[in-house]
Length: 250
Image 1: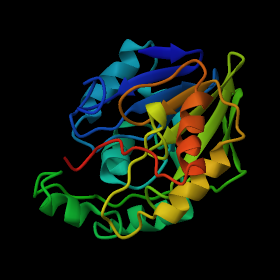
Image 2: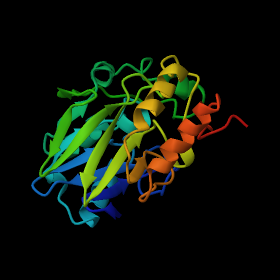
Image 3: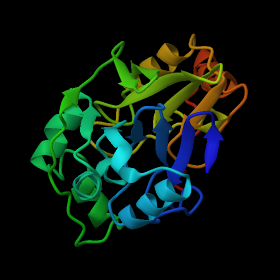
Image 4: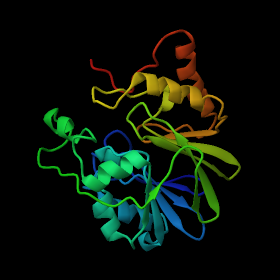
């Protein structure tokens, strides 16, 4: 599914469009002309369907040279080892915290242990360790062929969360991961490294970006006037409130 010039949706789960496994976040294919990259990889049970969707979009999975991670939660990065085995040795890119947790296969640090107890993942689901080859942080740039993405630090949903700002086809698109969603919603959870103070700082950091497209990792996109969703969240903060949750407790 092509969203915009150079941007394709090749994976999506139950909180999306059902293109791959229900546990998957949105998985995006970036076409830089001379090379391809994936943003996030899903939980791992939908690898075959993701590969099929890459082919269906007109590309060869072996041309994926980079795998770029927003953060280390299982629905975004749990399929890293399995997907990389199906590709041609791509370079994996993520924040230092993401690197440490994924290379150790640390299910506690990524919140997977409590997520399994809470019933969000099968009890036999395992986070398979895999190398993250390149560390990035705010202000760094990631080249994907002719395209360049700027890294934006966006912790709050979890430590080490980063987002990616890409200009293509004359539009500025923010791949926001789980930092902010359509409608200005956020996603705070009862896990150790989910922090409201960091989330507020992230929303303030995003406010001046003037993006055209907001492309989060779950549910809807906003391909025009994406900045309005960031502004809606910040407007709540201006009124000393907390933006609405993506998922409510009741």
